[in-house]
Length: 228
Image 1 (cartoon, rainbow, N blue to C red):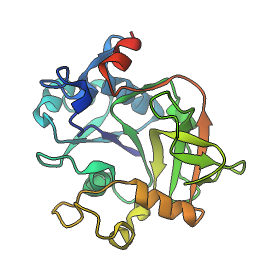
Image 2: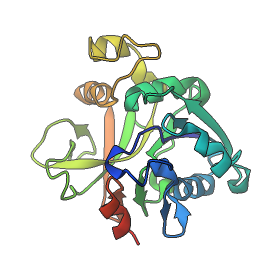
Image 3: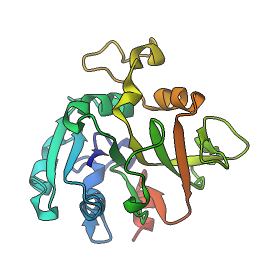
Image 4: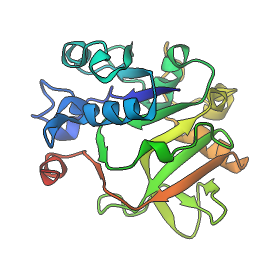
């Protein structure tokens, strides 16, 4: 199984910390944020990890090397000077990820979630890990139904954790799903993943789970400091 780590963001809400260091390379509890993910991916048996990069992309290879210290092979998917958003970034990385389902995780989260809980293959196009809504995101993202289906709307919405398993087929016909959104005309295209997920949800092709353990979206210096 392969994995994708989203690490291309500019970390604008964390300046000055991210003026010289990409957010996934900031230290948390004695390790860089991304290193927590790499350790867990290696323990799961993942052998190849794609890290998408843009902002301060040159900082990643010296910090992480080729991945051999974790028993991994790292590939860097450079998106150019401007990040391609989650959808564009995942599409850009697909040639490195191959045709099989893959795990994807945001490089700027910290969690004690055990990746071994994830299905190796989602029942549909994607399987998402959802968490309780944090104070900074009280409205949530998606609704988890009792049968494990995930829908865009529902009585109680939870927050997407940034952890999931996806099939490359999620991107079939992506242009018609995304429409004329700004950035689609670029080469490579820039767009968010959420519209593709919502389309798959309408077709009953997204499952999920509710994780109640530790999880932090490290989006501000205060949240970073709170992790200790």
